Amino acid sequence: MAKRIFSTVLLWAIVLGTIYFFTTPGAIVLAALVSAFTQREFYQMVVRMGHAPFSRFGLLLGAVITVAPLLSPRYPLVTPENLLALAAVIFAIRIVGERNSENRVESLGWTLFGLIYVPFMLQFLVRILLIEGPHGHTGLAFALWLIAVSKFCDVGALLTGMALGKHKMAPVISPKKTWEGAIGGLLTSAAVGAVVVYGFASYFPSALSPLLAAAIALPVAGLGIVSDLVESVIKRRANTKDSGASIPGIGGMFDLSDSLILTAPAGYLIFSLL
Image (cartoon, rainbow, N blue to C red; front, side, top):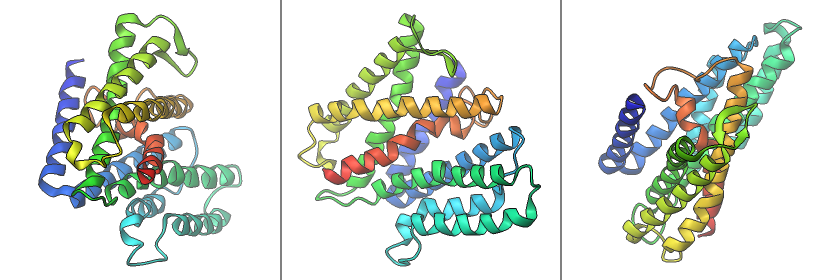
């Protein structure tokens, strides 16, 4: 637990420091790095399953997909959708001559799924960072709110589950998760969402009140829980406890970013409406 607390504090210091000193450009670079390392760990788990994804070119395309929202205004053809279509064409050609007949379908499927599930989903975090509003750094404020709501759900669920957890939520997928922990995580996210908007009200649209922020935080945090369970499904298929060992007490980058994969597109949709 001590390692987990230390890593959590350090990671928040990195996020807040990057936002404070480098603003939106620094946050986009940080999002791209998180996406790249997450996708890399994803492909490593696929290899442990016995498959052979096109990892190197997949990672290259993934990096461009993640920052495509930044590039597309200047280069209209560089959109996430176009890059995914290009990936499908290239990898479909490559499987004809570069993989054995027994794993060609799996190589194509897992490579493309890795592109869709990690960089394509996390590019919505970059889209959020690029949102402009009447107040400066609105996109940064939205992104910080989303990260806080998503990650503090994990903290609330862990602490509540340890104290009150009795009823297993998904015993086959993730035996330690409980319904009590999930409820605690949701309530924690609602409180954090309200506090962030209240404390930094000048950076958010006037339509987003603390009460509305708390209400929005509930479904967003719920998606974060589902996203965490999806990662657990993948890890079980790869027969591994953690996606990596780069972050003491937490695991790998995928273990850190998993909740953002589903919450990023949801958050972008909500923030665009605001």
